[in-house]
Length: 182
Image (cartoon, rainbow, N blue to C red):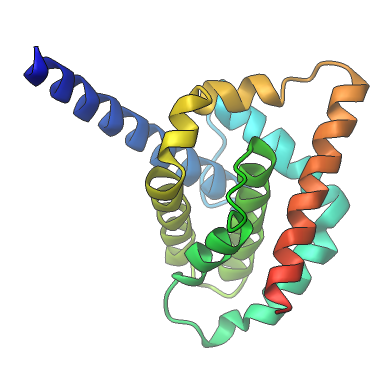
């Protein structure tokens, strides 16, 4: 019985890890135009695109300011993405809005790298975000129904819940800006 439990745990982590990695790579590839949008997107990918587009519609200048502060032209790796993620979640609070904020940050970083001709960095940023989520936020993701939970949280319901979600995302952006200015 114990072996079956361990085997199920390993399989679950492998499947969850592959799903997170594929979701990030697909999203960031589509966002930057390096990948063509898939005709039959997963609900998680469709939701992520909608949510990040909404975040960036309102907070693009804030994210671009973060990019300026990070001096990306002088970097030869993407380890800073994990540092930003660690800062974003440093108070011990995990929620879907912070995951969305981190993904929006990754999207802006990837667009910057693509515009600079560093297309290979797009995949590396996706790997870095997925690795962070699967190591530092794994238990929270599991407890919150993984990407199905993301879809449920950001379902296009009524305007009140959408407004509350946006306010929470804005708080995540504010936390990232504050931590970058320290």
